[in-house]
Length: 210
Image 1: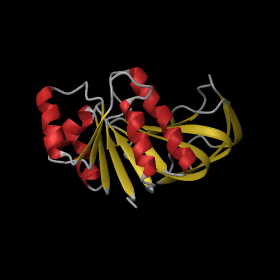
Image 2: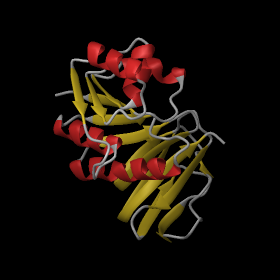
Image 3: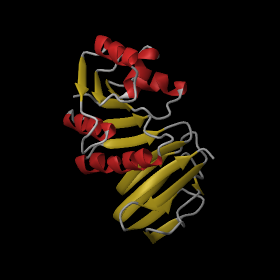
Image 4: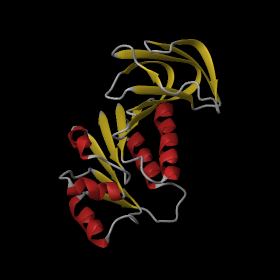
Protein backbone atom coordinates (compact mmCIF):
# COMPACT_ATOMS: atom_id res chain seq x y z
CA UNK A 1 0.00 0.00 0.00
CA UNK A 2 1.25 3.48 -0.86
CA UNK A 3 0.88 5.35 2.41
CA UNK A 4 1.27 8.86 0.98
CA UNK A 5 0.18 9.88 -2.51
CA UNK A 6 0.95 13.23 -4.08
CA UNK A 7 -1.28 14.43 -6.92
CA UNK A 8 0.12 17.29 -8.99
CA UNK A 9 -2.29 19.17 -11.23
CA UNK A 10 -1.89 21.89 -13.79
CA UNK A 11 -2.76 24.79 -11.49
CA UNK A 12 -0.30 26.93 -9.57
CA UNK A 13 2.48 24.88 -7.96
CA UNK A 14 5.32 26.51 -6.06
CA UNK A 15 8.86 25.13 -6.10
CA UNK A 16 8.72 25.24 -2.30
CA UNK A 17 6.60 22.08 -2.40
CA UNK A 18 9.23 20.05 -4.28
CA UNK A 19 10.82 18.49 -1.15
CA UNK A 20 7.35 17.51 0.14
CA UNK A 21 6.32 16.04 -3.22
CA UNK A 22 9.56 14.05 -3.45
CA UNK A 23 8.77 12.37 -0.12
CA UNK A 24 5.50 10.92 -1.44
CA UNK A 25 5.38 7.14 -1.85
CA UNK A 26 3.48 7.49 -5.13
CA UNK A 27 3.06 10.49 -7.43
CA UNK A 28 0.31 11.14 -9.97
CA UNK A 29 0.89 13.82 -12.60
CA UNK A 30 -2.31 15.31 -13.98
CA UNK A 31 -2.11 16.74 -17.51
CA UNK A 32 0.34 19.69 -17.40
CA UNK A 33 1.20 18.74 -13.84
CA UNK A 34 3.10 15.75 -15.24
CA UNK A 35 5.17 18.05 -17.46
CA UNK A 36 5.86 20.34 -14.49
CA UNK A 37 7.11 17.41 -12.44
CA UNK A 38 9.47 16.20 -15.16
CA UNK A 39 10.93 19.69 -15.67
CA UNK A 40 11.63 19.80 -11.93
CA UNK A 41 13.40 16.45 -11.90
CA UNK A 42 10.55 14.28 -10.59
CA UNK A 43 9.17 11.39 -12.63
CA UNK A 44 5.58 10.60 -11.63
CA UNK A 45 4.52 6.98 -11.26
CA UNK A 46 1.57 7.69 -13.52
CA UNK A 47 0.46 10.53 -15.79
CA UNK A 48 -3.23 10.95 -16.48
CA UNK A 49 -5.46 13.32 -18.46
CA UNK A 50 -6.42 14.43 -21.93
CA UNK A 51 -3.15 16.40 -22.16
CA UNK A 52 -4.72 19.32 -23.95
CA UNK A 53 -2.68 21.69 -21.79
CA UNK A 54 0.74 20.47 -22.90
CA UNK A 55 2.72 21.03 -26.08
CA UNK A 56 3.61 18.20 -28.45
CA UNK A 57 7.16 18.34 -27.13
CA UNK A 58 6.00 18.15 -23.52
CA UNK A 59 3.69 15.24 -24.28
CA UNK A 60 6.51 13.38 -26.04
CA UNK A 61 8.68 13.89 -22.96
CA UNK A 62 5.89 12.60 -20.71
CA UNK A 63 5.46 9.44 -22.80
CA UNK A 64 9.21 8.90 -22.82
CA UNK A 65 9.70 9.45 -19.09
CA UNK A 66 6.60 8.05 -17.39
CA UNK A 67 6.02 4.31 -17.29
CA UNK A 68 2.21 4.53 -17.23
CA UNK A 69 0.44 7.23 -19.22
CA UNK A 70 -3.37 7.12 -19.19
CA UNK A 71 -4.71 9.24 -22.06
CA UNK A 72 -8.39 10.18 -22.00
CA UNK A 73 -10.42 12.02 -24.65
CA UNK A 74 -10.96 15.75 -24.23
CA UNK A 75 -14.73 15.23 -24.37
CA UNK A 76 -15.55 13.28 -21.20
CA UNK A 77 -17.74 13.38 -18.12
CA UNK A 78 -14.87 13.84 -15.65
CA UNK A 79 -12.16 16.44 -15.19
CA UNK A 80 -8.59 15.20 -15.36
CA UNK A 81 -8.29 15.80 -11.63
CA UNK A 82 -11.31 13.61 -10.88
CA UNK A 83 -9.76 10.82 -12.94
CA UNK A 84 -6.60 11.18 -10.84
CA UNK A 85 -8.62 11.09 -7.62
CA UNK A 86 -10.33 7.87 -8.75
CA UNK A 87 -6.95 6.27 -9.43
CA UNK A 88 -5.57 7.43 -6.08
CA UNK A 89 -8.48 5.93 -4.14
CA UNK A 90 -7.95 2.57 -5.89
CA UNK A 91 -4.50 2.44 -4.27
CA UNK A 92 -6.02 2.72 -0.77
CA UNK A 93 -3.47 5.19 0.63
CA UNK A 94 -3.34 6.57 4.15
CA UNK A 95 -3.23 10.17 2.96
CA UNK A 96 -3.30 12.24 -0.23
CA UNK A 97 -2.13 15.79 -0.91
CA UNK A 98 -3.24 17.62 -4.05
CA UNK A 99 -0.85 20.26 -5.40
CA UNK A 100 -1.68 22.40 -8.41
CA UNK A 101 -5.39 22.00 -7.76
CA UNK A 102 -5.81 25.74 -7.24
CA UNK A 103 -5.34 28.10 -10.16
CA UNK A 104 -6.85 30.85 -12.26
CA UNK A 105 -9.82 28.69 -13.32
CA UNK A 106 -12.23 29.15 -10.43
CA UNK A 107 -14.53 26.44 -11.82
CA UNK A 108 -11.71 23.89 -11.74
CA UNK A 109 -10.63 25.04 -8.28
CA UNK A 110 -14.13 24.67 -6.86
CA UNK A 111 -14.49 21.31 -8.58
CA UNK A 112 -11.26 20.08 -7.00
CA UNK A 113 -12.38 21.25 -3.55
CA UNK A 114 -15.54 19.19 -3.98
CA UNK A 115 -13.46 16.15 -4.96
CA UNK A 116 -12.12 16.07 -1.39
CA UNK A 117 -15.44 14.47 -0.42
CA UNK A 118 -14.47 11.32 -2.36
CA UNK A 119 -11.54 10.86 0.01
CA UNK A 120 -13.67 11.63 3.07
CA UNK A 121 -16.17 8.93 2.08
CA UNK A 122 -13.31 6.47 1.47
CA UNK A 123 -11.79 7.20 4.89
CA UNK A 124 -8.62 8.68 3.40
CA UNK A 125 -7.06 11.84 4.85
CA UNK A 126 -6.70 14.40 2.08
CA UNK A 127 -5.88 18.06 1.65
CA UNK A 128 -5.49 20.62 -1.11
CA UNK A 129 -2.40 22.80 -0.75
CA UNK A 130 -0.77 25.85 -2.28
CA UNK A 131 1.36 28.74 -1.00
CA UNK A 132 -1.63 30.57 0.43
CA UNK A 133 -4.12 27.90 1.50
CA UNK A 134 -4.38 24.46 3.02
CA UNK A 135 -7.85 22.95 2.57
CA UNK A 136 -9.51 19.81 3.92
CA UNK A 137 -12.92 18.42 4.83
CA UNK A 138 -13.75 17.41 8.38
CA UNK A 139 -16.50 15.11 9.62
CA UNK A 140 -16.43 14.04 13.24
CA UNK A 141 -13.72 15.08 15.67
CA UNK A 142 -10.29 16.12 14.45
CA UNK A 143 -7.24 17.73 16.05
CA UNK A 144 -5.80 20.27 13.63
CA UNK A 145 -2.15 21.31 13.67
CA UNK A 146 -1.29 24.97 13.30
CA UNK A 147 0.69 25.27 10.09
CA UNK A 148 2.54 28.24 8.68
CA UNK A 149 -0.69 30.16 8.13
CA UNK A 150 -2.31 32.65 10.46
CA UNK A 151 -6.00 32.15 9.80
CA UNK A 152 -8.32 29.17 9.91
CA UNK A 153 -11.90 29.22 8.64
CA UNK A 154 -14.63 26.65 9.16
CA UNK A 155 -17.47 26.69 6.64
CA UNK A 156 -20.37 24.27 6.18
CA UNK A 157 -19.74 21.92 3.25
CA UNK A 158 -23.04 20.13 3.76
CA UNK A 159 -26.23 22.18 3.90
CA UNK A 160 -25.55 22.76 7.59
CA UNK A 161 -22.97 21.69 10.14
CA UNK A 162 -23.03 21.67 13.94
CA UNK A 163 -19.57 22.62 15.15
CA UNK A 164 -17.64 22.85 18.42
CA UNK A 165 -14.25 24.59 18.43
CA UNK A 166 -11.58 24.44 21.14
CA UNK A 167 -8.08 25.92 21.12
CA UNK A 168 -9.02 28.85 18.90
CA UNK A 169 -9.38 32.58 19.46
CA UNK A 170 -13.12 32.23 18.90
CA UNK A 171 -14.37 29.04 20.54
CA UNK A 172 -17.83 27.56 20.07
CA UNK A 173 -20.03 24.80 21.44
CA UNK A 174 -22.54 23.14 19.14
CA UNK A 175 -22.66 26.16 16.85
CA UNK A 176 -24.90 25.56 13.86
CA UNK A 177 -23.53 26.89 10.60
CA UNK A 178 -25.58 26.89 7.43
CA UNK A 179 -24.65 27.66 3.85
CA UNK A 180 -24.66 31.37 3.21
CA UNK A 181 -23.25 32.19 6.67
CA UNK A 182 -19.76 33.68 7.00
CA UNK A 183 -19.50 33.41 10.79
CA UNK A 184 -16.82 30.72 10.64
CA UNK A 185 -14.35 32.79 8.62
CA UNK A 186 -11.00 34.13 9.96
CA UNK A 187 -10.55 32.33 13.26
CA UNK A 188 -7.05 31.87 14.71
CA UNK A 189 -5.17 29.29 16.77
CA UNK A 190 -4.19 30.20 20.33
CA UNK A 191 -1.70 27.34 20.55
CA UNK A 192 -0.08 24.74 18.32
CA UNK A 193 -3.25 22.70 17.89
CA UNK A 194 -7.00 23.15 17.90
CA UNK A 195 -9.88 20.70 18.08
CA UNK A 196 -12.71 20.79 15.56
CA UNK A 197 -15.67 18.62 16.45
CA UNK A 198 -18.32 18.28 13.75
CA UNK A 199 -21.32 16.80 15.54
CA UNK A 200 -23.46 16.82 12.43
CA UNK A 201 -22.65 17.41 8.76
CA UNK A 202 -19.37 18.13 6.99
CA UNK A 203 -17.20 21.23 7.34
CA UNK A 204 -14.71 22.79 4.96
CA UNK A 205 -11.60 23.79 6.90
CA UNK A 206 -9.28 26.31 5.29
CA UNK A 207 -6.00 27.54 6.73
CA UNK A 208 -4.92 30.76 5.02
CA UNK A 209 -1.79 32.90 4.96
CA UNK A 210 -3.50 36.26 4.42
